[in-house]
Image 1 (cartoon, one colour):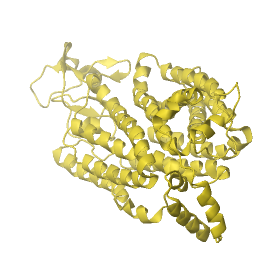
Image 2: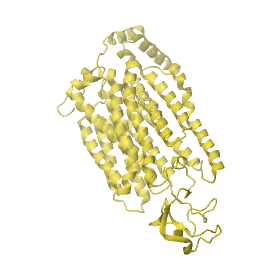
Image 3: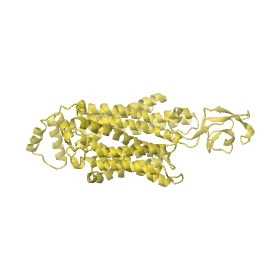
Image 4: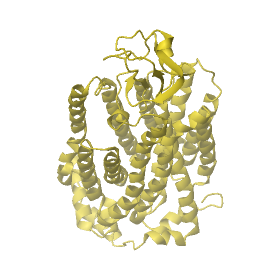
Amino acid sequence: MDVEYRCEVPKCDRENSHFDPPWIQNAVPFIGAIPAKCMRYVVNITDDLANCTEESVFMTTKLEKCNKFVYKTREKSILHEYNLHCDENVWKLALVGTVNNMGQFLSMFFSGIISDKFGRKVVFVLGLIFCSICGLIRTQAPSYVWFLVFEFLDAVFGAGSYVCGFILGVELVGPKRRVLISTLLSSSYTLGEVFVAGLAWIFQDWRHVINGHVIKQLNIISRLVNYFLYTPPLFLFVYFWIIPESIRWNLSKGKTDDAKNTLRQVASVNGKELSEHSLEKLFKVSQIESNDSFFDVFKTPILICRLVVCFFCWMTCSFLFFGLTLNSVGLAGNNYLDFILTCLVEIPAYFACIYIVDRLGRRWSLSGSFFITGISCCVYTFIPAGFSNLSLTLWLLAKFGATAAYTVIFVVTSELFPTSLRHSLVGACSTFATIGSMVAPQTPLLAKIWDPLPAILYTIMAVIAGFLTLLFPETVDVTLPDTIEEAVRIGKSKRHI
């Protein structure tokens, strides 16, 4: 976060100085109504008790750069921690989000391959544990560079776990419950966003700069909060004994006994009984194992086309979702509340998908979601200053559409590709999605060039994706394909890819 600050003026500012004392316009140059952040007029006095309200105290024809600052609010970010002040360091603040998404870029692809090879549960649990370890180490990062290193590793280990958990949930239920499962999983993500934003709102004065002793105390407090956030995942190793492996993955690898045991457990929990005859029928079906490899997809033109469209749609979803979330703190109003509202609107979007996706179909639901975002962002650019409530409403509607699109694209992609390659291909799509999420943290910088530019870019991307998704075949109530041949047969039509 880039907070508001100005130069500390020697001889004039005292401990606990106000951001805008009566004499400040004499002491620093102003850009409009905002004091310059890193430049001040040369002080023309030697007396510590000089009257700073006198213009003669300052040499307004001479400027000098400062290295001590006074802050407008008690908010504290890594800007203070690693001295990232002034315009030449703004890119370093934006780079944190980009580095995180670079880690996700690497994670999504390789976690998918590892998951398809060794199982969903292994990647899901170990990824979260190592993510926790990196997060805890990051609290002790001695410099900005080391902070970035562990930000990157945090994302490398954690990002693949989310997709893996999603795939595991989808593969454990039938067609009628896929959307419900994706809704519950995605809503958990939203609750995490709101939880962290709430903590940021409560503890925004972690490191208010008063003196070195206070900074040291508040650094300890901030680290305790980080320990609170990152310690619980260390105990997720118990998931190895709690959650089942994907039945479909076991069948695709010929592990019929493991699949049978999982089905028996599911039946027992639900108060049902599975006859041995039913299990034997399952055993016979599972004898047809898939030997499809990742590169076999590129031998089939129809799957290549689907994959390319998926790549663009995933990238757009990620760009819209994270861009709208990150830019919400720049809306007129309370930064924390705007962020929380922008996150909370995800939940009604997720649950709306339960009713809309099965009734309108996957294609029209996905396309309509993109168009909602595009139209809302387009109208937002025409709202004049001063209509903050209307601007916020349109922003929330745009986030509603982006969230729905992200939910449906997960479902559509998991239904278009075969079991043996599902996580690899969803991981490949997620890898392209991180291109959008890597660019998203940079969009606030576009507003410095022209304020409506981020919203215009969102509009263009959303509209293009909205038209492209109409090329997908409809997958409502379609049995998940287990082989490339079965995937190709979905929606056999000249109009669909």
